[in-house]
Length: 116
Length: 106
Image (tube, each protein chain N blue to C red):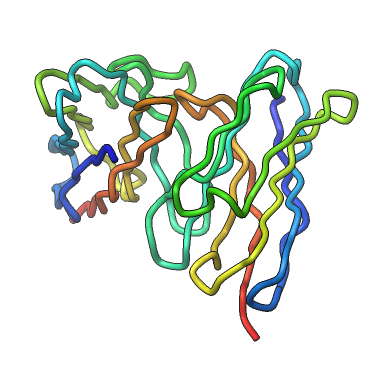
C-alpha cells in the first residue's frame, strides 16, 4: 500500500525557517518524481515544488522561488522541502504527493503556521 | 503564467448529472487531471490524462478535454460525491490548479 507521511510542520515566526519531510512507503521511491502542494485555510490547492526522480531537476512556484529548496534521499525514501524567510501567507497545510504531471497519491499533510 | 478557471459552485440533484468545467488557453493540447477533496481529507485523483480513471474510482466519473475546456462529468450523482473538485494541468514544467468547484448534492 502506498503511503506518504509528512512531518516537520509547526508554528514558526515570520522570517523563520522550517524543513518538511515526507517519508514514502509501498513503492519504489527512486522511480517517481515527487511534488509538494499547499492549501491555505479555506482556500484552494497551490503547487509549491517538484523534484525529478534523480533529484537533478527541481522546480518551484514563483511564490516560494528563491526562499525554498527541495531535495530527496533515496536511502531514506524521503523528500524534503526547506522553507526560508517565512511569511504569514505561507500558512497552509503542506501536502506531499507522488509524481508530477499527475498526483496519484497524497499524504495527510503537515500544517505550517507562520505567526508571531 | 498559465491559468485554469473553474466555476465556484455547481448544484445537482441526486441521480442527475453534474458537469464541472475547467478552461484555459489551448487546454485541449495538454493533459488534464481532476481531484476530489472532501472536508478534512486529502485530495484524491479521480481522472488523469483527460479521461482515464484510477481503478478504484467509480465509472460514474468521466472526463473530456477539447479546445479550451476540460470537463468532469459525474453521472448518477450520489450524496457521497459532494465535495470540492479541482482540475490540474502541467505547463512548462509547472503544475497548475484551477480554483476549485464545490459540488453540492441537493
